[in-house]
Amino acid sequence: MLIGLFRSVARAFALMLLVMIGATLLVRLAPGYLSDAREMDARYGNTVRAELAQEDAQSRSLTQMLAREMGGWLRGNAGVSRQFGVPVGQLIRPRLVVTGALLLRSLLLGWALALSAALVSSTRRKSGVVWQAPSTLLLAIPTAAMATLCLLAGSGGPVMVMAMLIAARDFKFLYRILRQAWLEPHLLHARAQGIPMRRLLAVHLAPSIASQLGALAGLSMVIALSALVPVEVLLDVPGLGQLAWNAAMNRDLPVLLAVTLLMALAVTASGILSGQTGAWERA
Image (cartoon, rainbow, N blue to C red; front, side, top):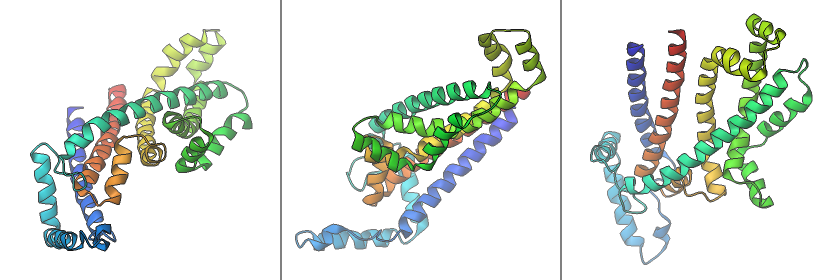
């Protein structure tokens, strides 16, 4: 188990390095990287062109760019924001709290909705269209469109949008897991003996599907992070997703790299926890 954990951490470190290289390369090669709207203003044109020329000279080598960004991380402040001129750490910390709270509430609400619907529908002899249609409809609506509808209607909010997205995607997986679990011989025998549903869920069902639920929890985190940017931008949530959008629009590589690494770290950590859950169950 310790060897598996060490391998997981090593893979996570390698992934972080690849994310840093890939994000830096994509930002540098993106169209318009060395352009600035202030060039059109006579008051700032010469100054901005001089700054862009200096940046062009410094960014021609990917190695130099990586060394500069890694130097900021080694100093503990993740570099200096190009847009705001302050250490990236000062921008990240308050927004990390906002995004963390949004993710936590969305995951809890989404799982509560998905589990409730899956538990009720999986115990029925026939799975009607009534239970499958809502999740199918929600999956067909893009996240940005769902957020826009909530904004226009003046109801709902970022937690509701993300929770509905998580619930719609997780419901189908949970339904299949529970449907298969209810057909296990020991559960059929327990239900035939008239054991109360609460005891069935806590003692017989939950232990048998714990590893699958752990893997699904990691997938839920990926789903939530994928919806973070459009939800925070459209619904004006001052979190990491909105910060990443502003950084991309203003070519702020240190900020964009920091947010990307944090999201990759969250996905990797959830994957490691899911894998360890399965390993502990097998042990």
